[in-house]
Length: 412
Image 1 (cartoon, rainbow, N blue to C red):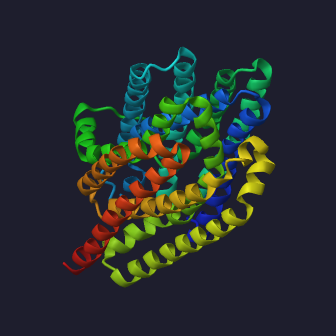
Image 2: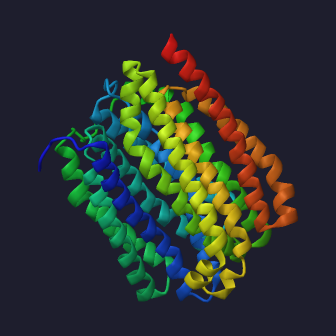
């Protein structure tokens, strides 16, 4: 395989193609359950598993991908990153089990959550490998992996569900297939660029824990914020209602994730411009990405307003289409959240790890304070109201900090 670097545009295309395919395939998991099951409780269990594991997936990743791809001076060796990722994956699996047992979920729900968590750990491990390749400007490898793993996940999940009628069996089939592909493709490819065999030392693990802990806690809180209203909705009104809400919300996630496909490939460029002190080019790129996010948001809102009810009815049937009033507020939240992800990444490049922790603590406090009255009064629509207000708080605080850092860090 050639080792030359790809251009930003080439990386963007490969990353977008693979990521879109993977995202569509993950959405199809929910579609399979909704369409082929008369009981929306099955969709609710899967939605609950996705919601909970998102929290611990962030813990497994320790949110170091932006730090890794901007670590151009290689403060840590690749073997150290690998060892640290394995350590955090094991810790997240244990904590996820403790968390699910604490909240009185049924045994079937606990099994579903834990099986899906094992699947998500595959994503966490391969995310590190793709970070190594991104630093070498070779996101084509990750794009191919995402494309094939996405297809494998849908086919294996559908086979498992049809074989047994069980969501849990579908997750088992999917996990075995995707992990096998990671071992057979992703790991050999990553070895061509970095040494990925983990080297465990107590001192290094401790040092990385201390350095990344504010970033990680902030990342867990950033997942906890959007997850808490959904979990409260399930506790208040049951898994069927959560299944309805999550089904309506799933298509809107395309907007949020699509935005990351654009700015993720340029994070290394942002880091390079920052290290060289090229403020004008940094600002130019910042404005370009911000404008693109605003354009995507505007187009998504128009599309959601015009096609929302028809699209939901077409995809899921009338029982979901009847809740189309939820769709536009969900799009508003996902657009705001995409912008907050972008500013989050910029602040990591500026190494504002402790400040991000403080911002996310404030955000979660706001979320908790407003979600109980809003969801109790407005139900599913209250989840939307909570998420929009919560994300606006994060955006304002992050934007102020980014503006201050651009002024101070470049002009020092």
